[in-house]
Image 1: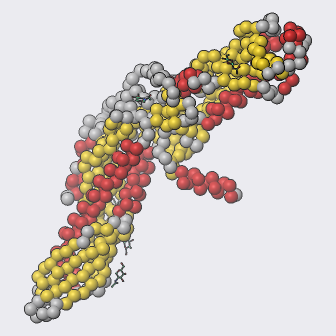
Image 2 (image 1 turned 90 degrees about the vertical axis):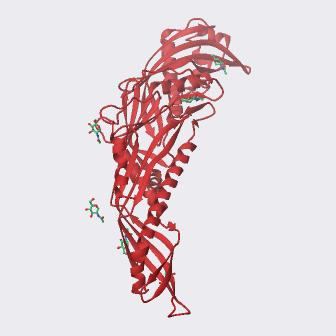
Amino acid sequence: MAPSIVLSLLPLLLVSTCCYAQPLEEGFISGVISDKGLEYAKELLIEKGIASIVMLQLPEIENSAQVPLVGNAKVVLSDITIKDVEVNSSSVKTGESGIVLVISGAIANMSMRWRYTVSSWLIPFGISDSGNASVKVTGMQVGLTVNIRNQEGTLKLALLDYGCYVGDLSIKLDGGASWLYQLLVDVFEGDITSAVEEGISEKIKEGIMNLDHFLKSLPEQISLDKTAALNVSFVGNPVLSNSSIAIAINGLFTGKNEVLVPQRYYQKGMKISAACGGLQKMIKVSIHENVFKSASLVYYNAGKMQLIIDELPDQDILNTAEWRFIVPQLYKRYPNDDMQLNISISSPPVIQVTYQDIGATIFVDITIDVLEDGEVIPVACISVEISASCAVEIEGNNIAGWLRLQTFSAYLKWSKIGKLHVRLIQSLMSSVLKTVVLPYLNFKLKRGFPLPIIDGYGFQNAIILYNHPWIMVCSDVSFLEDYYLGQQLAYVS
Ligand SMILES: *[C@@H]1O[C@H](CO)[C@@H](O)[C@H](O)[C@H]1NC(C)=O
Ligand SMILES: *[C@@H]1O[C@H](CO)[C@@H](O)[C@H](O)[C@H]1NC(C)=O
Ligand SMILES: *[C@@H]1O[C@H](CO)[C@@H](O)[C@H](O)[C@H]1NC(C)=O
Ligand SMILES: *[C@@H]1O[C@H](CO)[C@@H](O)[C@H](O)[C@H]1NC(C)=O
Ligand SMILES: *[C@@H]1O[C@H](CO)[C@@H](O)[C@H](O)[C@H]1NC(C)=O
Ligand SMILES: *[C@@H]1O[C@H](CO)[C@@H](O)[C@H](O)[C@H]1NC(C)=O
């Protein structure tokens, strides 16, 4: 294979990548891998590739030749093993039609065993010998072009072109006769070169096939808990531009035991860019506010937004005696009875991503129940509209939220114990919201939901940008082993 073959992979791509990138199709979570991310992925792939090639054993080579003054030599090279590979330079380029990875100036060290038998009329019983040799391959070029497409919700990797070209080869014999050395150089060099080229090419094919299997094995849904799953099916084809790869997934929450949440669409043609407010990050994950809306709807529909409170920091409030002067009717009817609050969300929370944070409007009905002789008697219900802002943070690989109360308004929905004073309602609600409802919601939100990222890798130095109606997480990615190690060290010290 000529070196020009590897290099000829490039022009194929670079056609028509100028100036216009097609829009990404509708997905509610999208990821853009920047050139910095591609560089990282490339290093990773090369590392994996080298690991798969080191200790690769090439097939035995057998040949025979007439050697002057010696006779007919039959030579076998066996145990041809690639010991080590060093890559001098490499590059990754993306274009509309695929991704090209080129490695150039690679060096490989190999070891092998040789043995020969010579027969000639001079030596009727024949002579034979065996020993070791080392081979050094320099100026090796490796290249491949892959394309990535959506196939029914999963990504399909296609190897369009690939090859390996060996520049120079030098052989060092341990022992052996000088005619053998010459024979290896004259007759076997080509065989060894092809064996290396074919062996490595085969490994590339195998590696891409494994990667393709891996992509195919990615789940289409991530189960979050008993109620919800996250739809991580890929939507549309990845969009390759000259400096980034953009991928979109559906990204909506779906209920486990119910029909689909209706999808509200947004305007198509989202502009793809890896821009992160001037920061160079490997990936940018954009999350549409519909993702949060779908989560709110799924949990609301599953009736998971309900809470019974029979304990408060100020426990006296939950006894009618405490209310005796404020709501005399209540005390008269149910003297000295314990009470509980039944807090239930009365309609799906309205969630909106703004330019600063996430705004949430939560509607709750707080029913005051009296507990009398094991019976729960609802006596009044207060409707509260809570306005909160939610700051988003990255916890490990999860995106989690933190609600802060902004304002609330409350009114009496119904009452069997007469009118309640507005001021009483306000101060009771303020206390309940601050000490119970928000801490409870924050506890739930703290777990967050996982951002789709490949197993074993984690976000590092993530920052969050708000850009209505999207939230963007810009981050570097690192192998989690480092992270775990860091954690362990933190425990030790
Ligand atoms: C990508 O294409 C744009 C538009 O043609 C160009 O300005 C930019 O320099 C290119 N980037 C790279 C890394 O080639
Ligand atoms: C190959 O072997 C030589 C000497 O045995 C050594 O100096 C060199 O670093 C090795 N190169 C690689 C790529 O392993
Ligand atoms: C590595 O590549 C550079 C330029 O691409 C070249 O000057 C250098 O000699 C190469 N080194 C080896 C060990 O091949
Ligand atoms: C050749 O190498 C093998 C291991 O690769 C070793 O066991 C053997 O002793 C070596 N032979 C000679 C003659 O050096
Ligand atoms: C998941 O998303 C894909 C792509 O948008 C869609 O075709 C599929 O119906 C969704 N699955 C569920 C269970 O919502
Ligand atoms: C709590 O109140 C809701 C209506 O606001 C009601 O549907 C539910 O049954 C009540 N739960 C309990 C345990 O009282």
